[in-house]
Length: 99
Image (cartoon, rainbow, N blue to C red):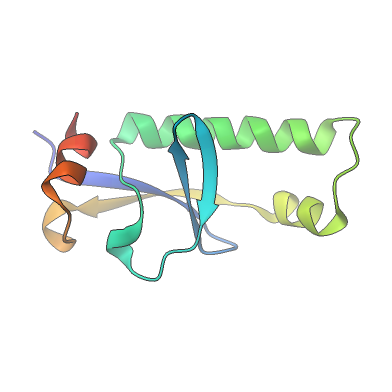
């Protein structure tokens, strides 16, 4: 059993990326234990999906607001690896991350 969890971080904005009920969310968290946790495969899938979505938005025909376009162009995603012993999590979060 792995003793690590993973979070997806947008390094430019400081926001964590999560996928909830099929939707991607970008949120800032005020403490490390607030962010959603994933196993490495799930975190990698979220990064891949975010990159594909970003590319489609930037290369598509639709006009997007200038501020959003700049944010997307500067976006750098990182998978943050965390030892379970370094963060307090509910049993439900730990079980979900280790599935």
